[in-house]
Length: 306
Image (tube, rainbow, N blue to C red; front, top):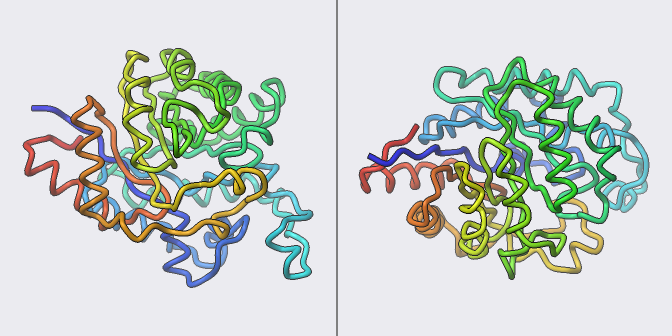
């Protein structure tokens, strides 16, 4: 019987829905201070839906994201972004503590998002700068997680930096690459996914993430060549346009698709499994209902969730 790892779905957008607060550069981080326990509730809902991996709510907890200063979101309101860098360690601890709610039901994946900004390869620091910053987070997570999940990697340089940083711990390293919504054979940087697959051959698993479901088959064609377990977890945003990539910085600048409900999304996920993927799940704008439908369809197909 084929075994499949079922990831959870999106965290940030789910927290927006539950908190009733608008997206902001630090919204998913701020909610752990304003509404402790809400993240744990989301983890529980995903576990109860059938997910076997819980992804910590630590994607945006980087020093460069926590520093106060200018941001389009706050500037529009005549405010400066708050400086939370002194809470760096405490925020990571909070994210890890919240994930403990499903310890025993799920493996815990320590989420490490991109430096700079999501999708923006042009804002990612050079490798010499990036490696110690990623490694700092990886070392904080390693004692308390089952694996490290570097997410939304937009370039080859970032992929190399994440792999090097992750290998400074004893935890398995999974690399998740974000690909062009219109051409899944290329990263957001425009570089070939085939070259990223060669880098990922040194990782423990490789995935495509936070891109349209329609872009995933082209990416998976290339990732299969890495020779390690591979898979995908897509978002349900409308296409991330080149205009957004030139200046957008938060999910507030994006909108949800209306044609990617649980059944349609599960169709895509089962298609990825048909291509050989053994790790699937959801990203932004997918929720527990999407994961529950994937789990149901997998069980109907005789697949074993691990």
